[in-house]
Image (cartoon, rainbow, N blue to C red; front, side, top):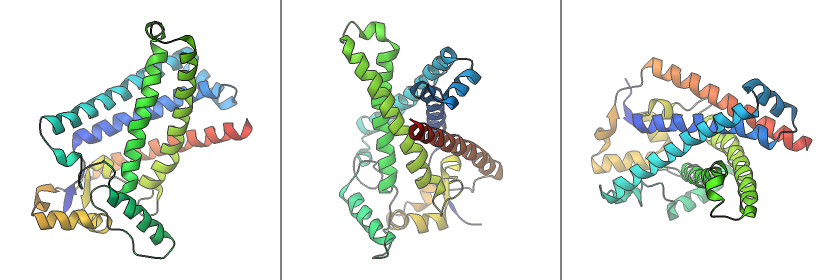
Length: 271
C-alpha cells in the first residue's frame, strides 16, 4: 500500500469548509443585489423569500467568514508570538512570498512555452500563496466595508455621509473581483487543471500519497528526507467514505461557483 503524508490538519480542513461555504453563500445572496436588474437575480431573491431574507443570510454568512478569518489570524499570531514558530514568516513552511516564488513563476512560464523544465516546488507553490493572500486581502476589504454598512448607525458618528457611498462601491466591486478570481482562477488552479480534474481531494482528506508528493512537491519531499522529518508526516491512506464525501462536497461547491461565475458574466455582457 502506498505511503501517505499529512498536508492539512483536521482543523485546517474544517476552517476551509466554513470559508468556502460562507463565500458561496455571500456571493449567492450578494450578487442579486449588485445585478438586481437581471432576471436570474430576481429569481434567486424571489426563491429565497425576498431581499430581506437574503440580507439576513448575507449577514449570517458574513459573520461566519469573519469568524474564520479572526480564528485563523489569532492562531497564526499565537504560533509566531508565543510559540516562536518564526518559520511561518520565512522559509518553505511560510505563506509569505519570497524571491524563490518569483523565480519559479518565471520558470513555469518557460515550461509552459516549452523552453525549460518544470520548476521543483516545495510545500507551497507561488500560485497557492497568491490565492491565500488574495483571500486575506479580500476578507479585510470586503469584511471591513461590510461591517461599516451593517452597523451604519454606529459608524455614522465617525464617518461623513459620502464615506458610506464609497464603502458600498468598494464592497460590491471588491466582492465582484474576488468571486470572479475564486471561481475562475482558484478553481482552475486547484480542481480543473488536467492533473487534478475534476476534484483535488487533498483539502478534504488532508493527505497526499508519496507518489503525488514526489511528483508535485519534490523539493519538500527531498528536504524532509534530508532533515529526517518525513516519517513525522506519515499517516494512513484516506478512507473511501472520506474520499467520496470530498468528491460530493467538492463537486457541489465547484458547480455552484462556476454557475455563479457564468451568471455574473452573463449580467455583464447584457448590461
